[in-house]
Amino acid sequence: MSIKEFITSIPVNKVGIKDILKFEKSPTNLLVAALTLLFLAFFVIGVGIYLVHGHHAYGVTRQHPWGLLIAVYIFFVVSSTGLCIVGSLGDVFGFKDYEMISKRAIFGSIVTILGGFAVIAFEIGHPVRMLIYNILSPGMRSAIWWMGTLYGIYLTFMIIEFIFLLKHDMKNARIFGLIGLLVGLAAHSNLGGVFGFLNSRTISNGVFYPTYFILTAFITGIYIAFIMMGFRYKLRFPDNAKVMLTNLALIQALLLAILMFFETWKMLTGIYGGMPGRADVAEHILTTWPFWAEVIFGMLIPFLVALLTKGKNHVMMFWASLIGMVGIFFMRYDLVHDTQLKPLQMMKTREYMLPPEWVHYFPSSTEMMISLGGLGIVVLLYYVGTKVFNLDADAH
Amino acid sequence: MARYGMALDYKNCINCKACEVACKEENGVLLGADKHRIWVGVKEVEGQWPNLDIVSNTFVPSQCQHCEDAPCQEVCPTHATYYDENHVVRVNSDKCILCSYCMNACPYDARYVDDRTMTVDKCTFCSDTRLARGETTTACQNTCPTKVRTFGDLDDPESEISILLKTRDHFSLKSHLGTNPKLFYLT
Ligand code: SF4
Ligand code: SF4
Image (cartoon, rainbow over all chains, first blue to last red):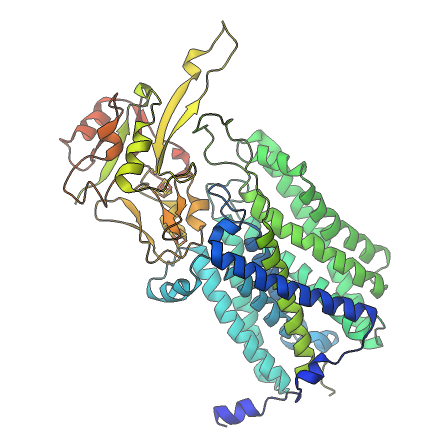
């Protein structure tokens, strides 16, 4: 089969702009549509401001060079890896109950990583130069090089897997899905390594982040699975979806328990012994509200909902997952901000200043607009995907 | 081919900041408090008069340590940060993508963004200016009124810096991180 034949034989729905604009005008749909348009407008405005003012439009500084956009990029790529894991349950590992979400999850993993790339393109100072020198003079000892390169490969495999899923070629989908999953996990743990390798930042240095990233990716994937299925079935789930969602909720409860256990020990080992640069930072983190937002929204509430309903109340799990995603956002923000909390220059270097204590950072409106814009892009692409492709499982 | 380093007799520093000014002037560093390649750190006197702890009051001039095992070089995804033939850690602004990883990885806060090129900049031991002109001093060293700084080739056993390091006790900053700095503080 020639490449042309292969491409033309991909099953897509013939839809025009009119079909895309057609949707049930329920209040929820209208709200989501309005928000998406608003966020897309934010993206255009934010990028415009960035193109004129460069990094001056951001709240980043010499002491805090990574800001909200890095956190949002991580948020999206974690979502992507998570959806890839959830999608692989059915189509790579062959668990029948999860096959119904494979196509949707894999498509979700493609759109979320594209959203991540859209955001990071305006954080990296020279994205085009990056593509060139990533190849011409690769820094093989750099976790960013591995992360970026592997994510590029991962995206390619995800797209190929998705095409095979559409064509219902399960054998090839499984092969490309497995490779994509492995590359994705490698890429994702390298993203944890970007932080874990930082000797200068004792609060982040070590094995914790590379492993925790995989765990939190799975958790994020399950949250988004609930959200996608909730929208797909308007919260009136058919029986086969119920079986899958109950299982996912129980897995989620287990994963959240493990995560809370990990976090507790990270904090305990951080504080114990009073090591300067680590213990003081860990204690400080405990006094910041985004940390508690992460714990309460991202872990506790969904955990309790899953546990108390034994995973059987899917509507509540849908809402808990939305809350969980808010918590996951704070989790990413905290990861980036807390790494940079402790100033590396501890002496006063100018008159009329106090010796540095904690590094302050607050995202600028431009950063917020581009970040929300990323969300707008993801929702738009996903919505268009639901029209163009059949994301439901094929009948056997 | 040399292996340049700098010894700082930091207790002689009087915090006049002439070195900061000379560096900006010589290397065309942008104005602005955060745009600096070198700095003088101040530890203020502790205690209440008349029980002042006068030894607590120190001035610590500093800059990029030109680490032998530089974390900034290791993390750079495009090899924009590199060791030049004189073992000076440099940034090739044509290759820098401004991912800012090096700014986070450098334990000494020695890097900042140059707004003209939108790339990362740092101390070069005056490689582009004075060394390129054939001089063997740096601007900060040349201007220092109390002769805090001694710049030279660590591989040349006869150089002033080599002799100083053999005869005077010294330490380097955050040496436990394994960066092997080439800035030495004489005690
Ligand atoms: S002091 Fe910082 S910028 Fe200089 S070589 Fe060492 S790690 Fe790199
Ligand atoms: S900001 Fe530039 S010099 Fe620093 S790590 Fe990134 S590419 Fe390398």
